[in-house]
Amino acid sequence: MTITYNGEKTELADGTRLGDFLREKGYRPQIIAVEINLAIVPKSDYETVVLKEGDTLEVVSFMGGG
Image (cartoon, rainbow, N blue to C red):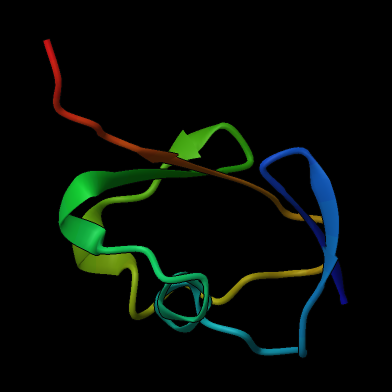
């Protein structure tokens, strides 16, 4: 299936869960925010949300600094 991930078309296996995708990409859930189709996904849902054909996924990492 094809989704859009941070503005890029990306191929994934059908049934890919959000949590698995985030781990594959090396994200640490504690320091990111995730939006699917313009809706924020609660961190508690990362392991249960299944990505679907045509989804638009945006992942934002928080960075410290001054």
